[in-house]
View 1 (cartoon, rainbow, N blue to C red):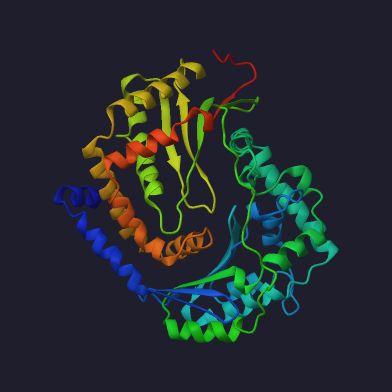
View 2 (cartoon, rainbow, N blue to C red):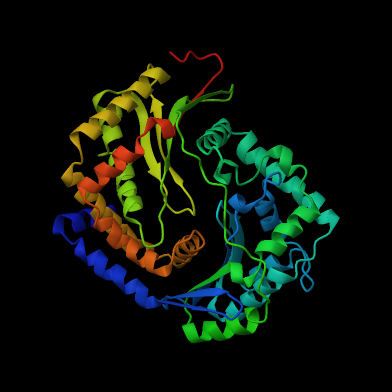
Length: 448
């Protein structure tokens, strides 16, 4: 595949991916049921398989203060009993029909999915519609599953200095927004999550007019519509559902710094995060420029940071930049630098600052930008080979505030970005007052 990507670049076939990407819209059908459920169908008839994903516009950032982690907690609880299914029966039936299922929670959404043979789609819809409305929880369910999520936090966060460090850094970046609260929740609040907390979140957000159903695979839109009407159509909408109004960030006027020391740290490193704009419906140009900027600065062997910090000065053994504009509200743009063995964290941070200042002075390398755009376009084609990946992309975008038109316009938006667009975005982004710089290190290590 790497050879093929290289050949594409050499042959100047950047236009080919755009033509192919335009075809994906022809495979996508969407409609909305009378109760408000949005349904998106992505046809792929290469194999008799279907992915059925139900996405709720409700994630950890939609929680109320004091009950952090309840969105993720409820995700777990949906695998308990309903009025028609016993605890664990949902997954058992999926497995007995040769399929797999799971769920996940993020800041802006919660999603449940099954991958099965195409002729089992109606069964999946029937069971998923059942647990949208008929969850039947007990106090015992709360006690047992609460222990499960606390143990999950122990394994994924408490046992990882890097995870604890990222949690603290994220909390410092968002002064007021719920994105600063971990998706899994703060432990002291998780320990108090109750049946009433879970049911309040369930009754408020788990309704057809707050959901997006994505069906991808060997299906026909008319057949999906018929099954969706039969299984989901009778479910009542929530008339009290309000727009997703979250606390927004105030002007950030002071740079923040934090140092996290932990005996378990094997390798010290530096992070720098900036508050950054997200992809907005009808206006994705800035996000597209930031996506390319992340690749230019820290996206691989030819990136600015790799060249300056690793190859030219041997200051770092690893460096990277990252940005994900797929969020309902302001996202973040960040850097990570792992210093070489004989380099202090301060020296590594100074080298990062010098590399960024140098980029702002010299600007974009046009050949590098062309390569990145070609690789991006090729990756969009390869993504079409993964039906579940496509379903994920559409569901995440639609529950993060975008429309189908924005999803289909994204590749063109990226290709349209000019070097001037990238430099303008970089100068606006790299504002010290909107940044958080963090050092992760052992307690006995010297910062200087």
